[in-house]
Length: 370
Ligand SMILES: Cc1ncc(COP(=O)(O)O)c(C=O)c1O
Image 1 (tube, protein in one colour):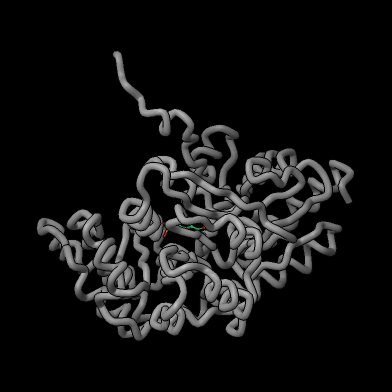
Image 2: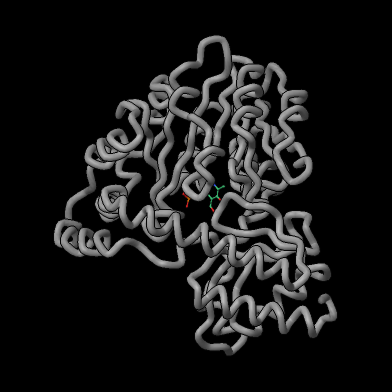
């Protein structure tokens, strides 16, 4: 083969997804493994979602509704936005890609933080843009440093709030002040994949931020059905944004990007608010419990507003990750994110949390970390 591989592709390292239970069980010969590695909802989808999906199966010989009419109406009803201010993607990942596809050309600049969700930089590389990566300060987005690197070429700024992998969140006042200083030509993307797990007073008022853009940057909020709603396997996320931006994203969106089961499942999830509140509640309680218990083991647990915790285990994080794998517990190693002493653990069910804590305790004692 004599391929002409574009220079920008040569530099791209494929996204490292969390290890699956199947992989672990094949590689390590363990059974009954648990996965606390990908910030999923450990309790699964609402039973009402499962029923809605079952009854929708017999119509999958038809193409799905390309406009996602019912789902968009459902999102509009819940958020107060107009349907023409909502764009649905194959996971919020796809909405990130739409933003880059629509607004970033060769040489344009995009600002994000390190560490943060890895897909921002990857899409920018694929589309030939320039990544400006600003280190976190005290485990949070450094808004002043971000402001300093904004230039005439800046098209997008990505802020995951809460941040993945630290779980830290920005104070709403800091966010409003920052936005008021960003030029009107730059779109700021607030990635709110974990917003539901935040304390209510920490949540940013995206409705007024998106609606009142006079004299400052436009804002896009990204949401997902992969976390609190427990549907990562269906792949659905959405963006809330000014209608003018949504119009541009719809031009780069292919028809039928959201399959029929995803549309039905996401709408049913949105309608089951009791289940939503139950998941928020058990996750927040599990987070507090895991934090207290790990601190009791001598770990440093970073304050998190998400459904995961970044934990400094006081030694080699990679070794702790591997020892957990041998006990059938999958968490995320953090060396690639620059936190060699840390692991990231997703909040699980009580049974999973207990198994993780017992395993961690044995390992830390064995390694002499506690
Ligand atoms: C900060 C952040 N944004 C976006 C996503 C992507 O979610 P989705 O499954 O909706 O593509 C993730 C997934 O873990 C994430 O951590």
